Amino acid sequence: MEIFRREAELNDKPVKPGGGAVICWMQSVQRAHDNHALEYAVENANRLNLPVIVLFILDPAYPAANLRHYTFMLQGIADTAKELENRGIAFFTAIGPPVETVVRVAKSLDAAMLVTDRGYLRHLRRWRKEAAAVLKIRMIEVDTNCVIPCTAFTKEEYAAYTMRKKYNRLLPDYLVPLKTHKPVKTFSQDPMREFNPYDIDGTLKILKIDRSVPPSAVYKGGPVEARKLLDTFLDGGLRDYAVEHGNAAINSGSRLSPYLHYGHISPLRIALEVDESGTGRENVGAFLEQLLVRRELSINFTWHNENYDMPSGWPEWGRLTLDGHRKDPRPMIYLRERLEAGETGDPVWDAAQKELLASGRIHNYPRMIWAKKLLEWTKSPEEAWETAVWLNDRYALDGRDPNGFTGIAWCIGGKHDRPWPERPIFGKIRYMSTGRAGSHFNVKGYINRVNDLCTAAGIQGIDTV
Ligand SMILES: Cc1cc2nc3c(=O)[nH]c(=O)nc-3n(C[C@H](O)[C@H](O)[C@H](O)COP(=O)(O)OP(=O)(O)OC[C@H]3O[C@@H](n4cnc5c(N)ncnc54)[C@H](O)[C@@H]3O)c2cc1C
Image (cartoon, rainbow, N blue to C red; front, side):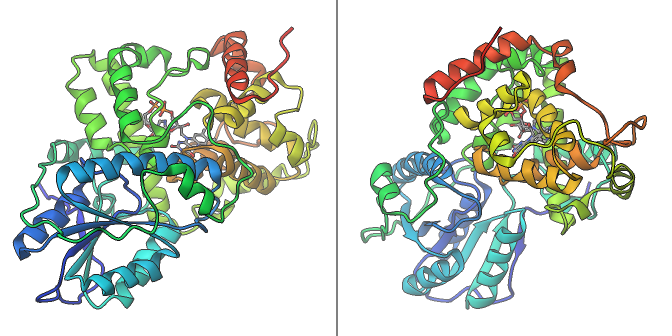
């Protein structure tokens, strides 16, 4: 069977003979284990008899990032710094615009080659492309945030059913543990540190960033936390995942999406351990469908469709049907501020929004209804879309991710879905509503759970009658 490579050459420049090091620019995948890009860098450094240096660049102007996101990310960087230290790999930290900074550090180290991970969104791809053009050395990117490299799917898939068969056929070749390589040469000087990876508060203080969203009151970032959550899930939630994964009242699911977003945990590691857990196939299959097919379908969308973050990325039938219902009267139009505060008076919607405000997550089931409701409460499908993306990216720890763009496009624009019986406002877009939430989960239990999160975050909860 054809094996698609994880590595791609981003330029055709030479590996510099006599260079000082191999740099692994850790950008989208922030972990020191189960990281194909890092292992590829170590292997090449060993072959060239050079030290490998991991470089992490903190960009204070990262799109839509705020204090909540930077805190979660830096909690992960502290874990990663420690683990790299234990592996004897030098960890450089820098602050600045990514392209300029990576070029500056590569020059100062007289690097022989540069390896990086793959990012699937427009700005991440542009950074890599620009760096590869400016650098005078070979630059390679390695796909380590997908179990099957996204380039194995050469066109945009229409829906999960068009991807699943090929995905499952290829999977056995990729569901294999990654070997760890020991670096043969260590970097003998002090590593460059433009911020101290262990001093999270100190770093946050010096950064000029948007501080309008506080850190999550519930979730701490980092590979260590991710590992704990995976263990908890393997010992509990996975066992009834097929039946319970829509149960927002018990916060079912692995809760790993923020950690996957920052690369604090590898999807391959999760898939391997779930597969080998001895849990029944029904639960394992239901979970792997989400982690593998659905997640990598989202990546396929952002990788192949340059309009992934705009309504023109929706399927034609979705755009046409919404257009046909543009003038339908809306039951209510809410100002963005009211929505943002979770003060619409609809207890399920407000609970979802408050879950997001307090914890940085919305459980998947209320998340679908939350986005769908915006179609009814804003002036147009475009405004519904913009509002959902804005709230999701601003507050969700897993936001600004292929899954976010895809999940919202599914809810509002029919992406990866099919036409349903026509009705007002939605047209043929699948209808879901807060009023019907009770047939999917215990609403009172959900609101109680969200109110506990609100107490932890020090924000007003939902009144229960
Ligand atoms: C409106 C809307 C917005 C969304 N925004 C995001 C987002 O910004 N970031 C994000 O990661 N997910 C997003 N999702 C998908 C889904 O809500 C989350 O991935 C899931 O709730 C995360 O919880 P979990 O880690 O416990 O998932 P689990 O049920 O434990 O699933 C394991 C993993 O599978 C993947 N997964 C689960 N459900 C989906 C799905 N429907 N589509 C694609 N992948 C999935 C995630 O990576 C998840 O961590 C969105 C969905 C909707 C409807």
